[in-house]
Length: 175
Figure: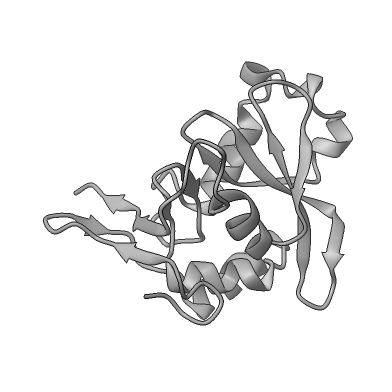
């Protein structure tokens, strides 16, 4: 079972695979230093407990990691969404100046992307930002006020026809 904040989420690691390492304080601090972005505290706790991977068999969450080529490396994940500007016509979602303040950290199997809007702090003490989704159908919308709220009020919240499993599968490393 996980730590204090996310204690009801079970980590699932089927045998026969290698998994990306979980984030460390040093790795998270290094990411913050290089990017100039102070990560939300609840996101940092999540990354240290789980690392990058898939939550509830539906949501992919990236994390800072030393593996620069892994698609769930937070830096690579964010930049890949920014590079898809032309392919996804982000202009219909964002003013180009607003796009500079968008930091992508996750997506789901339906192709929806999740991001922090860096100019919208929801809790300065905890370094939390509002979280938005780019749904398959326009427009984007705010869905959570913190990363913890994103996990529990979006990812793990029972829906009318779906009860998500409280499981997390860490990112698999292909060797």
